[in-house]
Image (cartoon, rainbow, N blue to C red):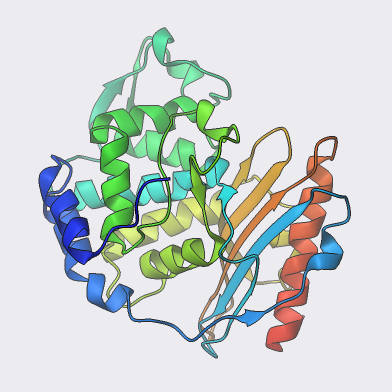
Length: 305
């Protein structure tokens, strides 16, 4: 696991990378506000949802109306799988804001780019997709080649690490591309639920988010429009609430979902859920656990069902 970075090393890492233009500089300027300590999260006992030996559920919720935070295994590490694509899109949008990238820039899609799960990029082999189309495809449909292309175009994995550091997140690890990043290997490509919830709040809720209004609206639309994961956070949310989320599935146990839920006239509730099932389990079991964890958290917060 990489060593934890202090503020000086965060800013040094940002300044040393080609990716660290005005977009990430603005992110770093807001670092002080992002790192103001929150009250300790309350323990939300979700052990009953870990039904098989070896099951592990990481869950964090932050109610922006009351300020309360609840967590179960909130500081443990979980392979994040495709949930990182929300953060990848945010990092790319910051590059657009900084003039380092353009939404309408066309990128050639080649057969060499293809790996498993390519609903957006496979039909475009031999032609081009814009940066905006690649972001939309990787967030809404979890297109894997699109994610790798966006990482390549921003300067590689070091640039994505710099993005997290700019948010004040020095714990999330970035080690591999798709699809290798989904495989459990120590602390590689892992995140803590409480940290993930803090990142979501920083990007989508905080008034001084580094995303400008257009970037935030674009990312929110993709997160709301995603058709994946209807049996996860969305299944546990109150009827009629808007769910903006990004799922991730490892295919061998990990079933994840992160984002926020909101209803008019009320600040949103941020949720980060990571279920790592024991070998032989089903994705459906993980989805049910996340949905029930969401219901229990909302009940504990006193949110009407």
